[in-house]
Image (cartoon, rainbow, N blue to C red):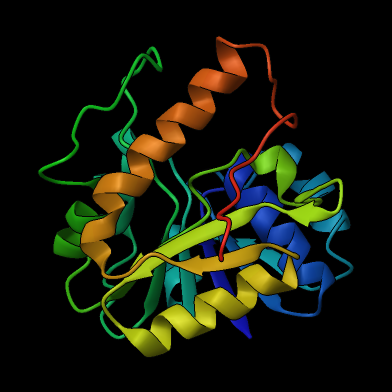
Length: 211
């Protein structure tokens, strides 16, 4: 599958690298293609990834992953030149700059805002409720961490669910995109536990128990 990743920070680089290693073709979309850190990232992808502009990545991907800070999301979406018809995986959380909370929530969400900004895209919220350091190994003992996803297009969710399953997550369909209003506060709880309660970046994840 062709995957465009908007952003090459911790989330974007981890997802792009792992999918490239599994044989997907990946284009990282960045504003500064000469960043030396990108060379090491590309070396880790076994030749299945390249770097281009945000517009290059959006045009390339059948699936496009939005993995930038919330403060940069609007400009990044504009810079893609349009995402109509694409499956757009929204990994963002609307975090306050000091990580003390969310700047929007309960009556709105970053996922819904992304859908409004990226007109015509099939937005699926995913990869936002656990830190990127866990993407390579989401196993906790005998269990896999749950990866909650939500979106309004069932076919798009199925594609994203498969990509998450390839990374060994327990995929949980949380319903329509409005469920982003609950997944983003769940991400805030994960961050609080990591930073304030001493669990660290790889010490915890959430698991849905089913009866």
